[in-house]
Image (cartoon, rainbow, N blue to C red; front, top):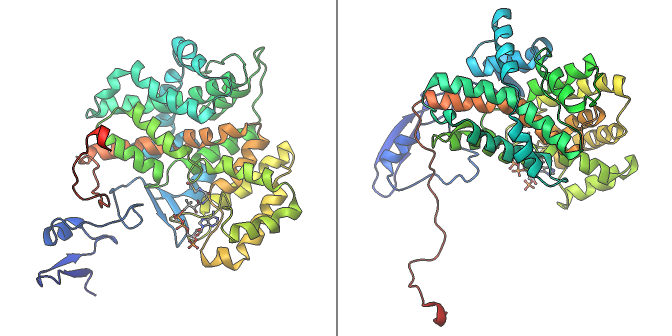
Amino acid sequence: MNESITLTDNRNGASVEVPIVNGTVDARAWADLLPGVYFHDPSFGNTSGAASAVCELDGDAGYLRYRGHPIEQLAEQSTFLEVAHLLLFGELPTRPQLNGFADEIAESASIHENFHKRILEGFRDDAHAMGVLVSSVAALSTFYPDGKDVEDPTVRRSQMVRLLAKIPTLAASAYRRSVGNPYVQPDPDLPYTSNFLSMMFRPAEGGYEVDPVLTRALDLLFVLHADHGQNCSTTTARSVGSSHADPYVLLSAACSALYGPRHGGANEAVLRMLEEIGSYDQVDDFVAKVKTGEQLLMGFGHRVYKNYDPRAKIIKETAHRVFEVTGKNPLLDMALKLEEVALADDYFVRRKLYPNVDFYSGLIYQSMGFPVEMFTVLFAIGRTPGWLAHWDEMLTQNSRIARPRQLYTGEATRDVVPIDER
Ligand code: ACO
């Protein structure tokens, strides 16, 4: 079979044959044939904006792999720090590599006292944790101007370690500030996720024991969120990074993109939706409203997955393990019924709408004691190695600045009328 397409400009009969390589055609061939004529693809649904070796997903087949490793195997056998090493440096670590990496992270986890006093203390008491995270990650840029030398791979490596190390500390500090509790310093003797839980929940007088089942569940959730190809926040990260901005403002921009309810903010929106539905017997009425377009079923649907999201399957199993420790989340029955009703309904079947990663994650977070405002922050901690891996990869590719074209739909040329004559 000839793996190519032929484009013909019917205005003059000129044509060009373009090979199909890995399911893509090179837009430069189009540009050569049709200078000044552009693809109009506002949500990039039919545009590949990056070549990446970080993560592969197939929405029809329903699989997700990080650097070739199936997500199911990573979820079962690897910790979040191993997965972060895999995404950032290309391979799962040996034990000595992992120990060295964990030590580097532990050494960089604390944040400057001025940061607590002058920046975190400046927010309103009811500030949303994601707003605090977005701003405080950006503020790190002012503390670490060395991060601006983005073309130096050694500099990039230390910024990646620093950001991965500090993001849980910032997240926990944002939470403790919002509840008026004193900040807890990172404990270098604790593993990554236990340390985060300790910074979140340890009482001032000490004596906090992290439950191993809950720690493993949260670590697993971080693994499942660690990367997902060119989603909205990663595309934002690559776009900002393409201007050679420093990684702190880049990560802040990625967190901003994640915040929206169509993306990472969906985990918070699912919980609010379940609370609004209120009871099991209201589920059918709610689904009816979704079908008339009055509501969205949050936690359902995905641009790429047109099959069950493999992460949602693992999260659903994890939820049951967590509820054995915490007791069942009262919203679970409603969520299960929503899923059952939706998966049997022609509206959802025809549109291939399945639960995504956010449908069950919020129930777990809530049962573990996280307030709803922290849910997207948890997603951001998990996604940090993915964003950084894409940033680093892009800078090794001699990429050009991101600069799409636009289809202008405004007024034709017109004269400016002096202000008093308008
Ligand atoms: N509930 C009800 N209907 C839906 C939903 C939903 N959650 N999602 C999509 N649809 C419908 C659309 O209305 C559309 O119907 P139509 O063909 O009659 O117009 C059809 O399904 C196709 O939807 P699109 O809008 O084309 O899907 P798109 O790929 O642009 O959007 C998105 C994907 C944003 C995830 C969307 O499904 C959504 O808003 N879901 C709810 C929010 C959510 O859970 N986001 C998390 C995504 S995963 C993540 O980012 C971590």
